[in-house]
Length: 392
Ligand code: NDP
Image (tube, rainbow, N blue to C red):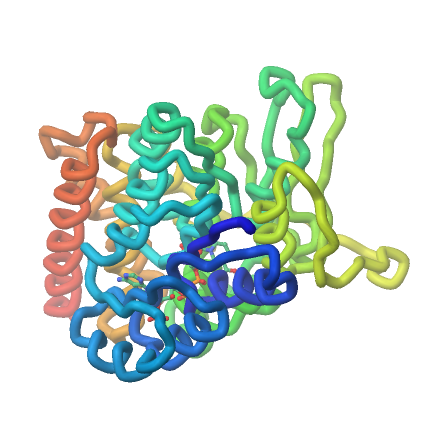
């Protein structure tokens, strides 16, 4: 039996992972499941999968978790240290699907045990790519992509020489405001930004899709995963979300990966890699679909894509700054403190401010340095938002 742990088990990726594991329950032994505030879901899944331990990220939720697990034989734990302890428990395959920078430390702990880490938590790679890669190399661990675009590229590269790759094109649905006039987007509400046309995902990544901060993160993730240069990465708006990525080779061939917009494909590919196994996802009927559309993204509509290029060119700790500024700007948008388009203004201002920091050019090769830069940026983002609100 394969030992598996799922970090962020109560979220959208976590639940899709559990769905796949449940379908073949006899093949897996669940070590740890982690969540945040959704204690009922966490406890129920931990009972059903007979997990060794269930961990909530929040100490104040521990009593509820303990109560919900009474008589189950599943241990209950809480807090950031407990997440690390859960990552320290031996497992063959670990899903990293905590949302945000909080996923970084448990992911690193898992890699130190030489495990296979299926990485949905793109924030880790954006903030600390060098650190993740060095842990993988040191401990003979493995990092597998879970983002649908990166899984698609990964699959298109099987048996290929990365030196023969000219370009990688990742697609974007265009998010909730794809067809909105630019002038209307400034007044978009949280509810409007939280409605994705094609994918069913957590709220934060759905809003990040509308602003294309998610795509900007994925562009940086592409550079980190596949080691290509910023100039080799392109983004295409593709409203149907069926072509997830394309890889262009030096002989002119363009290999596309198509599939239904269902994360269980990419999760399942990472779960069964290097094999392919039957997955419960829709089979595309291209004759019925008839047409697939592609267009270049309008950078005025999506300033995050321009900022991603600046992050990659800046290097050093700019990825950590970008991720933290984006997360905090999103918190402020969700809290109603700033408008939709102001999120990009806040991130850009933080990138300008932090580019003067004496450590900004340093490689993100140690956790404390990354966390310090993250904390400084979040504080700076709060100050920038306060100033914006004062201005009215
Ligand atoms: P969700 O918001 O649905 O789930 C996030 C998970 O993280 C939940 O289990 C949540 O717990 C937990 N969590 C929240 N805050 C913390 C914290 N501070 N510490 C520890 N755990 C916490 O997110 P998604 O599943 O949509 O996304 C997860 C990751 O996967 C993100 O990095 C996202 O970018 C990436 N991803 C998501 C895709 C998708 O289709 N959803 C596609 C590709 C990548 P609780 O809910 O119990 O509070």
